[in-house]
Image (cartoon, rainbow, N blue to C red; front, top):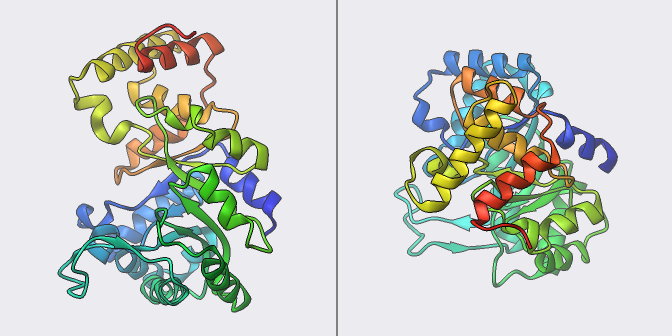
Length: 300
């Protein structure tokens, strides 16, 4: 799969399916297989994980489903992440939360993910967070070794600012294929800090985590959330009765960087709503009215 195909895959009008809460769902392996089949039958393909999700258990949880139903694997574009070390009862050697993008850790983390996921390859491996001690040459060496071994097919980053992205990209003989970032109606910074401009310039589709503001959109009573919620309700009515979350997803997907929202729900009905939202077309006035509500003032 070349970079053009990757871009088309990530730009397909569908959300990526995030599994950071998979261990909270308490599905049996059979239930997880059924859920995965339903999601794939909707048209989903991109599944997003990380080694640290679910207190280091999410990958194995989903891997049990892949082991029970091996045919699922070829229907999935599988993403996972590495480079963070959390304080956890699963990792007693971690005395403090920190980052590790050494060659040894990246390769060891990828190999552990392969074991947990019961697969012979990771479609896309991301560095989870910028590491202040990142040696770009060392990260590149790890990526090249994993790609040469056929263990990881593509690479990207998460939460990188443009300068960090460009530094790592400058050391690689192949392109990074995404930057997974926080982007929502309540977190618009990537529009203005150069992150989404860089994605457009490189024709790289970013992935948007917390596209619903991590629950703030529905629960928070702060002034920004109240303003945005009201505007999303107004636009939803204009669009024939769309829900607040659908309009918020559509707003993210409408950006010309072709951002891919990541939905984190385990409920099939919520995932269907997210699919429907990715196909909604907002007018420019609707899109800018939501941006102005988020910022709390008329645009300059």
